[in-house]
Image (cartoon, rainbow, N blue to C red; front, side, top):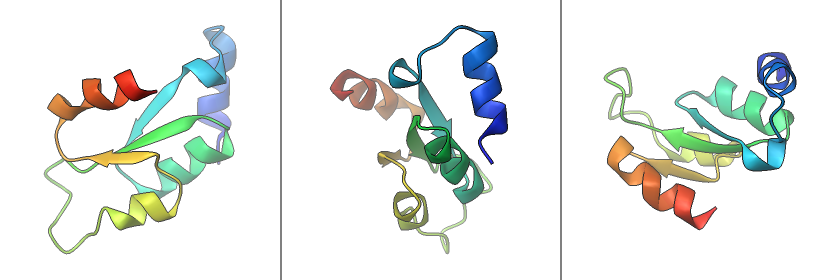
Length: 79
């Protein structure tokens, strides 16, 4: 459900094509994609256990998945 992302875009006068969402959940990735915004998956949180695959985030539309915030600049520079 993209409502929260769409509201943030609207109230902050942002452009979807210039916005990136950082998400660590399938639900969040799906919502970001449904809003028409690029989503980067993040598996850095302590709740991200080894039995979860980053492919879950890719499958639902994450542009890329990073395991640490230190890799975020590299991805943003590509976009």
